[in-house]
Length: 226
Ligand code: CDP
Ligand code: CDP
Image 1 (tube, rainbow, N blue to C red):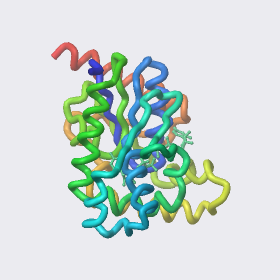
Image 2 (cartoon, rainbow, N blue to C red):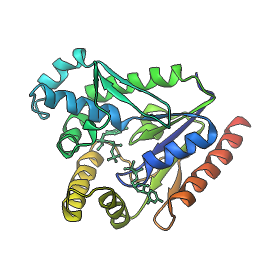
Image 3 (cartoon, rainbow, N blue to C red):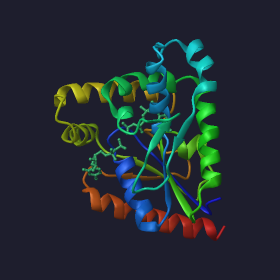
Protein backbone atom coordinates (compact mmCIF):
# COMPACT_ATOMS: atom_id res chain seq x y z
CA UNK A 1 0.00 0.00 0.00
CA UNK A 2 1.13 3.57 -0.71
CA UNK A 3 2.59 5.28 2.38
CA UNK A 4 1.32 8.69 1.36
CA UNK A 5 -2.22 9.37 0.22
CA UNK A 6 -2.96 12.79 -1.21
CA UNK A 7 -6.71 13.49 -1.39
CA UNK A 8 -7.92 16.28 -3.69
CA UNK A 9 -11.55 17.39 -4.08
CA UNK A 10 -13.19 20.24 -5.92
CA UNK A 11 -15.85 21.25 -8.43
CA UNK A 12 -15.73 20.77 -12.21
CA UNK A 13 -13.05 22.84 -13.91
CA UNK A 14 -11.09 23.63 -10.75
CA UNK A 15 -8.12 21.78 -12.25
CA UNK A 16 -8.34 18.56 -10.21
CA UNK A 17 -7.44 16.04 -12.91
CA UNK A 18 -4.75 17.98 -14.74
CA UNK A 19 -3.12 19.34 -11.57
CA UNK A 20 -3.31 15.98 -9.73
CA UNK A 21 -1.73 14.17 -12.68
CA UNK A 22 1.09 16.72 -12.91
CA UNK A 23 1.70 16.62 -9.14
CA UNK A 24 1.75 12.79 -9.19
CA UNK A 25 4.25 12.78 -12.06
CA UNK A 26 6.52 15.23 -10.25
CA UNK A 27 6.45 13.12 -7.06
CA UNK A 28 6.71 9.71 -8.75
CA UNK A 29 3.29 8.83 -7.29
CA UNK A 30 0.36 6.92 -8.74
CA UNK A 31 -2.81 8.78 -9.71
CA UNK A 32 -6.45 7.78 -9.28
CA UNK A 33 -9.25 9.64 -11.08
CA UNK A 34 -12.38 8.62 -9.14
CA UNK A 35 -14.77 10.51 -11.43
CA UNK A 36 -13.79 8.04 -14.16
CA UNK A 37 -15.53 5.20 -12.25
CA UNK A 38 -18.80 7.13 -12.01
CA UNK A 39 -18.48 8.10 -15.67
CA UNK A 40 -17.72 4.49 -16.69
CA UNK A 41 -20.79 3.29 -14.80
CA UNK A 42 -22.93 5.94 -16.53
CA UNK A 43 -21.47 4.79 -19.89
CA UNK A 44 -22.20 1.13 -19.00
CA UNK A 45 -25.78 1.92 -18.00
CA UNK A 46 -26.42 3.88 -21.23
CA UNK A 47 -24.81 1.08 -23.25
CA UNK A 48 -27.35 -1.34 -21.80
CA UNK A 49 -30.23 1.03 -22.59
CA UNK A 50 -30.94 1.50 -18.90
CA UNK A 51 -32.29 4.91 -17.92
CA UNK A 52 -29.74 6.45 -15.49
CA UNK A 53 -32.63 7.52 -13.21
CA UNK A 54 -33.93 3.92 -12.99
CA UNK A 55 -32.09 3.24 -9.73
CA UNK A 56 -33.40 -0.27 -9.24
CA UNK A 57 -32.19 -1.47 -12.66
CA UNK A 58 -28.90 0.43 -12.28
CA UNK A 59 -28.28 -1.36 -8.98
CA UNK A 60 -29.18 -4.76 -10.41
CA UNK A 61 -26.62 -4.20 -13.20
CA UNK A 62 -23.72 -3.48 -10.79
CA UNK A 63 -22.73 -7.16 -10.56
CA UNK A 64 -21.92 -7.15 -14.29
CA UNK A 65 -19.96 -3.88 -14.16
CA UNK A 66 -16.39 -5.03 -14.76
CA UNK A 67 -14.34 -1.86 -14.28
CA UNK A 68 -10.63 -1.18 -14.33
CA UNK A 69 -8.40 1.88 -14.53
CA UNK A 70 -4.66 2.31 -14.83
CA UNK A 71 -3.09 4.48 -12.16
CA UNK A 72 -0.15 5.70 -14.24
CA UNK A 73 -0.48 9.51 -14.26
CA UNK A 74 0.99 9.66 -17.77
CA UNK A 75 -1.44 7.20 -19.28
CA UNK A 76 -4.79 6.74 -17.60
CA UNK A 77 -6.73 4.02 -19.45
CA UNK A 78 -10.28 3.16 -18.42
CA UNK A 79 -11.77 -0.24 -19.33
CA UNK A 80 -15.25 -1.70 -18.94
CA UNK A 81 -14.93 -5.42 -19.66
CA UNK A 82 -12.94 -5.63 -22.90
CA UNK A 83 -13.92 -2.13 -24.06
CA UNK A 84 -11.55 0.83 -23.79
CA UNK A 85 -13.88 3.64 -22.71
CA UNK A 86 -11.16 6.23 -21.93
CA UNK A 87 -12.51 8.71 -24.50
CA UNK A 88 -16.16 7.65 -24.53
CA UNK A 89 -16.67 8.49 -20.85
CA UNK A 90 -15.92 12.17 -21.58
CA UNK A 91 -18.76 12.47 -24.11
CA UNK A 92 -21.49 15.01 -23.24
CA UNK A 93 -24.17 12.26 -23.08
CA UNK A 94 -22.16 10.56 -20.32
CA UNK A 95 -21.57 13.86 -18.48
CA UNK A 96 -25.33 14.45 -18.62
CA UNK A 97 -26.10 11.00 -17.14
CA UNK A 98 -23.38 10.71 -14.48
CA UNK A 99 -24.95 12.67 -11.60
CA UNK A 100 -28.06 10.45 -11.66
CA UNK A 101 -26.01 7.31 -10.99
CA UNK A 102 -23.56 9.04 -8.62
CA UNK A 103 -26.30 10.18 -6.26
CA UNK A 104 -27.30 6.61 -5.33
CA UNK A 105 -25.76 5.65 -1.93
CA UNK A 106 -25.31 1.95 -2.88
CA UNK A 107 -23.46 3.04 -6.04
CA UNK A 108 -21.22 5.30 -3.96
CA UNK A 109 -20.30 2.56 -1.50
CA UNK A 110 -19.73 0.08 -4.36
CA UNK A 111 -17.25 2.36 -6.17
CA UNK A 112 -15.67 3.54 -2.90
CA UNK A 113 -14.67 -0.04 -2.12
CA UNK A 114 -13.08 -0.28 -5.59
CA UNK A 115 -11.13 2.93 -4.83
CA UNK A 116 -9.90 1.57 -1.50
CA UNK A 117 -8.71 -1.68 -3.12
CA UNK A 118 -6.91 0.33 -5.80
CA UNK A 119 -5.23 2.48 -3.15
CA UNK A 120 -4.22 -0.64 -1.19
CA UNK A 121 -2.64 -2.18 -4.29
CA UNK A 122 -0.84 0.98 -5.47
CA UNK A 123 2.81 0.10 -6.05
CA UNK A 124 4.54 3.46 -5.55
CA UNK A 125 5.34 5.45 -2.39
CA UNK A 126 2.29 7.61 -2.76
CA UNK A 127 -0.95 8.07 -4.67
CA UNK A 128 -2.89 11.20 -5.56
CA UNK A 129 -6.63 10.52 -5.49
CA UNK A 130 -9.03 13.15 -6.83
CA UNK A 131 -12.79 13.56 -6.91
CA UNK A 132 -15.59 15.04 -4.81
CA UNK A 133 -15.61 13.07 -1.55
CA UNK A 134 -12.00 11.89 -1.23
CA UNK A 135 -11.05 14.22 1.64
CA UNK A 136 -14.24 13.37 3.53
CA UNK A 137 -15.39 9.82 2.71
CA UNK A 138 -12.95 7.83 0.58
CA UNK A 139 -9.72 8.79 2.40
CA UNK A 140 -10.48 11.04 5.39
CA UNK A 141 -7.17 9.91 6.98
CA UNK A 142 -5.08 10.89 3.97
CA UNK A 143 -1.68 12.41 4.79
CA UNK A 144 -2.54 15.51 2.73
CA UNK A 145 -6.08 16.72 2.01
CA UNK A 146 -6.74 19.56 -0.40
CA UNK A 147 -9.82 21.36 -1.68
CA UNK A 148 -9.03 22.85 -5.08
CA UNK A 149 -11.38 25.70 -5.94
CA UNK A 150 -11.73 28.50 -8.49
CA UNK A 151 -14.43 31.06 -9.17
CA UNK A 152 -17.25 29.69 -11.29
CA UNK A 153 -16.62 31.96 -14.30
CA UNK A 154 -12.97 30.92 -14.45
CA UNK A 155 -13.88 27.22 -14.19
CA UNK A 156 -16.43 27.50 -16.99
CA UNK A 157 -13.96 29.37 -19.19
CA UNK A 158 -11.29 26.69 -18.65
CA UNK A 159 -13.62 23.87 -19.56
CA UNK A 160 -15.08 25.57 -22.62
CA UNK A 161 -11.55 26.39 -23.86
CA UNK A 162 -10.94 22.62 -24.08
CA UNK A 163 -13.88 21.96 -26.41
CA UNK A 164 -14.54 23.08 -29.92
CA UNK A 165 -17.79 21.28 -30.71
CA UNK A 166 -20.03 22.87 -28.11
CA UNK A 167 -20.77 26.49 -27.47
CA UNK A 168 -19.33 28.03 -24.32
CA UNK A 169 -22.85 28.83 -23.10
CA UNK A 170 -23.92 25.16 -23.39
CA UNK A 171 -20.83 23.95 -21.60
CA UNK A 172 -21.35 26.49 -18.84
CA UNK A 173 -24.96 25.48 -18.32
CA UNK A 174 -24.15 21.74 -18.32
CA UNK A 175 -21.37 22.23 -15.77
CA UNK A 176 -23.50 24.41 -13.54
CA UNK A 177 -26.35 21.93 -13.52
CA UNK A 178 -23.96 19.00 -12.87
CA UNK A 179 -22.31 20.86 -9.98
CA UNK A 180 -25.76 21.70 -8.59
CA UNK A 181 -26.90 18.07 -8.76
CA UNK A 182 -23.60 16.76 -7.33
CA UNK A 183 -23.49 19.24 -4.46
CA UNK A 184 -26.84 17.95 -3.20
CA UNK A 185 -25.10 14.63 -2.54
CA UNK A 186 -21.57 15.63 -1.46
CA UNK A 187 -20.32 18.98 -0.21
CA UNK A 188 -17.23 19.70 -2.30
CA UNK A 189 -17.47 23.49 -2.05
CA UNK A 190 -16.43 23.93 1.57
CA UNK A 191 -13.28 22.52 3.14
CA UNK A 192 -13.88 19.98 5.90
CA UNK A 193 -11.83 20.25 9.12
CA UNK A 194 -8.12 19.86 8.39
CA UNK A 195 -8.54 20.24 4.62
CA UNK A 196 -6.34 22.91 3.02
CA UNK A 197 -7.95 25.11 0.35
CA UNK A 198 -6.00 26.03 -2.78
CA UNK A 199 -7.81 28.68 -4.80
CA UNK A 200 -6.61 28.57 -8.41
CA UNK A 201 -8.72 31.51 -9.65
CA UNK A 202 -5.69 33.76 -10.14
CA UNK A 203 -3.09 31.03 -10.67
CA UNK A 204 -2.03 29.63 -14.03
CA UNK A 205 -1.60 25.89 -14.42
CA UNK A 206 2.06 25.70 -13.33
CA UNK A 207 1.44 27.97 -10.35
CA UNK A 208 -1.44 25.76 -9.27
CA UNK A 209 0.73 22.62 -9.47
CA UNK A 210 3.42 24.38 -7.41
CA UNK A 211 0.86 25.50 -4.82
CA UNK A 212 -0.49 21.95 -4.51
CA UNK A 213 3.04 20.48 -4.24
CA UNK A 214 3.83 22.98 -1.47
CA UNK A 215 0.76 21.93 0.51
CA UNK A 216 1.62 18.24 0.00
CA UNK A 217 5.18 18.81 1.26
CA UNK A 218 3.98 20.78 4.27
CA UNK A 219 1.13 18.43 5.21
CA UNK A 220 3.12 15.21 4.80
CA UNK A 221 5.92 16.63 6.98
CA UNK A 222 3.37 17.70 9.58
CA UNK A 223 1.43 14.39 9.58
CA UNK A 224 4.60 12.29 9.69
CA UNK A 225 5.57 14.12 12.87
CA UNK A 226 2.28 13.15 14.44
O1 CDP B 1 -13.71 16.29 -14.25
P1 CDP B 1 -15.15 16.65 -14.00
O2 CDP B 1 -15.23 17.68 -12.94
O3 CDP B 1 -15.91 16.95 -15.22
O4 CDP B 1 -15.88 15.42 -13.37
P2 CDP B 1 -15.31 14.04 -12.89
O5 CDP B 1 -14.30 14.24 -11.82
O6 CDP B 1 -14.93 13.26 -14.09
O7 CDP B 1 -16.59 13.41 -12.19
C1 CDP B 1 -17.73 13.05 -12.95
C2 CDP B 1 -18.92 12.90 -12.02
O8 CDP B 1 -18.68 11.82 -11.13
C3 CDP B 1 -19.22 14.09 -11.13
O9 CDP B 1 -20.03 15.03 -11.81
C4 CDP B 1 -19.95 13.44 -9.95
O10 CDP B 1 -21.30 13.19 -10.27
C5 CDP B 1 -19.26 12.08 -9.87
N1 CDP B 1 -18.21 11.99 -8.83
C6 CDP B 1 -18.61 11.76 -7.53
O11 CDP B 1 -19.81 11.77 -7.24
N2 CDP B 1 -17.68 11.54 -6.56
C7 CDP B 1 -16.37 11.54 -6.85
N3 CDP B 1 -15.48 11.28 -5.90
C8 CDP B 1 -15.95 11.79 -8.19
C9 CDP B 1 -16.90 12.02 -9.14
O1 CDP C 1 -10.70 17.89 -13.22
P1 CDP C 1 -11.33 19.26 -13.23
O2 CDP C 1 -12.67 19.29 -13.88
O3 CDP C 1 -11.36 19.88 -11.87
O4 CDP C 1 -10.39 20.22 -14.07
P2 CDP C 1 -9.32 19.87 -15.21
O5 CDP C 1 -9.96 19.08 -16.27
O6 CDP C 1 -8.07 19.35 -14.60
O7 CDP C 1 -8.97 21.35 -15.69
C1 CDP C 1 -9.76 22.02 -16.63
C2 CDP C 1 -8.84 22.85 -17.52
O8 CDP C 1 -8.33 23.96 -16.80
C3 CDP C 1 -7.62 22.09 -18.05
O9 CDP C 1 -7.50 22.33 -19.43
C4 CDP C 1 -6.45 22.69 -17.27
O10 CDP C 1 -5.26 22.68 -17.99
C5 CDP C 1 -6.95 24.11 -17.06
N1 CDP C 1 -6.36 24.81 -15.89
C6 CDP C 1 -5.91 26.12 -16.06
O11 CDP C 1 -5.99 26.64 -17.16
N2 CDP C 1 -5.39 26.81 -15.00
C7 CDP C 1 -5.30 26.24 -13.78
N3 CDP C 1 -4.81 26.97 -12.78
C8 CDP C 1 -5.79 24.93 -13.58
C9 CDP C 1 -6.32 24.22 -14.67
